[in-house]
Length: 500
Image 1 (cartoon, helix red, strand yellow):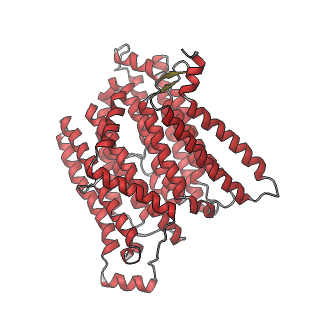
Image 2: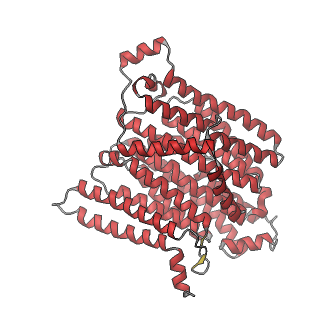
Image 3: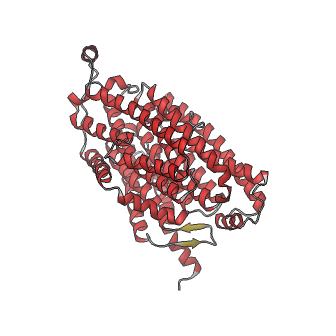
């Protein structure tokens, strides 16, 4: 039998490795970046490749310790199959992000190595949050990850919009973190402990009077703070401005990685710790999810800029996940995981294609009208974009259809009939604004063709080898999961078994 400290180190060895690697890379780049005989572009290239290599090794460490589970360091951390899946899922997206943006990083950040180190710190914060078995550890990891994203959003030094977006994100994020911390402090003051497993045991046996106003306020503040960071309505108004001002590569990162781990924290504390308070957070999440679908759908209908269109679309899809989560049932939790997995798999190539378009456009935001006649000049791009939009709209037999129909099954199983019918109608409305984009791609009126010819707005987009590889892989996954969605559904089922 291994000694206590050896067993504890083995369980969190990937986190230790990535933490020490970040410190070494930061010292190395800071020391050699100030040398006059070394070009700053070389240091940036070293930082990019070293960061990719570190994440690649961490993914192998996670695969090697995939079935290791248990507590570590006196219950401060907890490692299980679900935590390893979430971390591996995040790493896959970040590695794809590094691959896809390899040709644009050096143009966008020619003299900066800090960008990749901030991404590594953000991943390190995600690992801490996912493994943490303490409310304080969750808060510290969340702040570490959030501070890195604030810096990444405002990393475009030549853009005033990027600075404004970073400042707005910082102010709103600090406000939500304050609500979250205040909720944790009320829970700690009431229960006398911040360990999640201990809180779960105390609340499950009704050791405390769960009708106490202080603990109810603490739980409610926790949900408000988390939903704020997920951009769930009515706390979503910061998201369009932040995504619009953020650099294009950063928009991919913050639209994928933070969502999966914040959603996991929401599930972990809702079902493992605060399940006795489901009479509070169940209707609350249902109302917030319903509002997100409404505001996201109607907001996307009125958008003229492509990036803001994607943001409002993501708000509506997060609403579907929250609605399924509000059912407080095993099926609802399983289907919410299934939905978030498929949504992120579909949204990554969608955002990637947008960033590729923006890199060739090179100035100003992209308006939907500028995508007219894209099929004539970019047939592969338009066809891929069209299939992805059909999938995310929930058109059968693509993967997005299963995620939405399973949310409907969750609501019907919980006897929430009226809300399920309204959500189906809103899903039909959501298909309309996706079809509007497809119409612009393939069908234009005579006057629009004349205007497009006179303004010469159409342009050809060239894919690099790595960009074509990444988009093709995700495109194949979308088609395959539409034919056979059993793999993501089984993964969602296994994660639900551990967290329900």
